[in-house]
Image 1: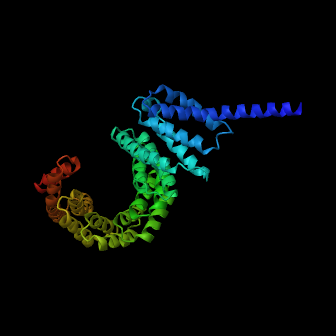
Image 2 (image 1 turned 180 degrees about the horizontal axis):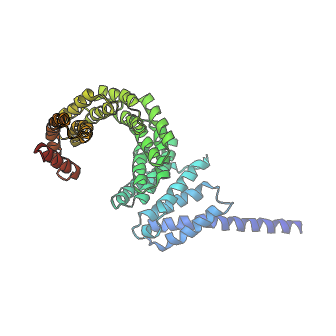
Amino acid sequence: MKKIAVAVILLTAISIGYAQEGNNICVWNALKTRDEGGGTDELEKATKCSDDAIANDATSGKSKTWFYRGQLYRTIFQDTVLKRKYGNAPFEAIKAFKKLYDLADPKFKDWDEVYTNLYVLTTLTFNEGVDQFQKRNYAQAYQYFYAIKDINIVLEGKKKDPTVKLETALKNAAISAENAGDKAGALNVYKEWLAIAPSAAVYEKYATALKKSGDTVQSVKVIDEGLGKFPKDANLLVAKINIFLDGGKYTEALVYVNNLLEVEPKNEGALFIKGLAYDKLGKEDSVVYYYQKTIEANPKYTSAYINLAAVYVNKAKPINVEMNALGNSAADIKKYDELKTQIKALYVQAKPYLEKAKELDPSDKQVERTLYQIDAALAGK
């Protein structure tokens, strides 16, 4: 009786084991059928078998379960019909091969086949990311580009060279996330990108993304960290300058403006900011000098012409106030005429700069109005 009982148990165990392995056999058969020219029906049926295999404790830990699943979904991703129906195919394939890698099964010997699948997936996934980006499907593009990360983890972990550098994939993923309005996704990618390939450009982009998300404190920390490693980078210096300008700290801003001009002596933006900073600090001679240097660096820098004109127009304002406070006595009338002459002299200095600004940007209505007022004043109206 005991022997019969044992036999029954053994037979039951064999039956259960076969049923469990049956899901993997189902997937393998579907792949074989496809290789022999079969259609898509078997592949679709195999997706259910694969789902059952990874859900079953007896097969979820087996390397071939994930190996077959990766091959299945890679095949589906390459099928023009099934690809549209199974939009998650590339991600399921990549996830399966990553799981296979994580299992670290010493008995698994088909790594060359895995590498072939991963190289195919790299090309297909990256190209799909480009297609989605060009179609302005930025959220989808982000997913495809970011998926390259797990492919590279497996390839590099097995001492194989990836066909797409992770830095390139993360750069594209970050741009896609930002275009999709996915601030959290962009920040996550920039952080990962910075960890694997720290550069001045990544520091600046990460800091900018942090600022857009409202985290100005962390943004400043990232800029400072970046400047600690790349003290002469123009973009990081500009970011630091803007922090001081936003806070009204013009003296501090000038330190970094000077650092920037050491790197790029003819940087019109830096020259303009220097003029602006001196304007806020009330140093008129320096203001005029640096706005003029800005124009020398870039004769089409409209704001420099406008701000130069403003130097003289603003000097006329307190004189106007003084004129309007005068009375009708002979002395007041004489004083009035003297002040009027002073104002006209200032307007004469301002006018050429405004005319140039109007020439460069005819749509600027404020410049047009100011010019009209100056012409009227000079005509004695």
